[in-house]
Length: 96
Figure 1 (spheres, helix red, strand yellow):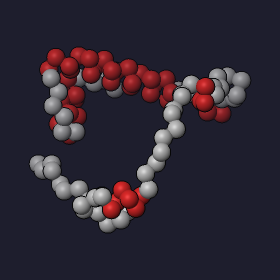
Figure 2 (cartoon, helix red, strand yellow; figure 1 turned 45 degrees about the vertical axis):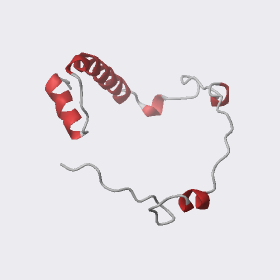
Figure 3 (tube, helix red, strand yellow; figure 1 turned 180 degrees about the vertical axis):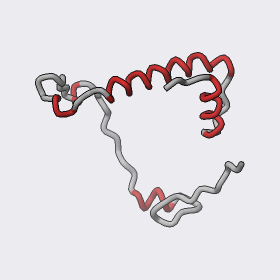
């Protein structure tokens, strides 16, 4: 698949993104890299994957997330102006 500047502009329009023309080359390079990785993954046979050829990593040793106190759901919704006790109601702000 070939990503060109017109495709990037079209995707930006669909996503309601304003892209600076100076950014097009960088975005194209990133998208080309992602598509190349998908092509590599597409050619992998999952039946040939074993624990011997996939490096296993202990995620606890990689990410040191601090423990945070979580807010009580009821107290959060009680502070909200517009909710139905399960979801925040947000007014529509984008129209086309």
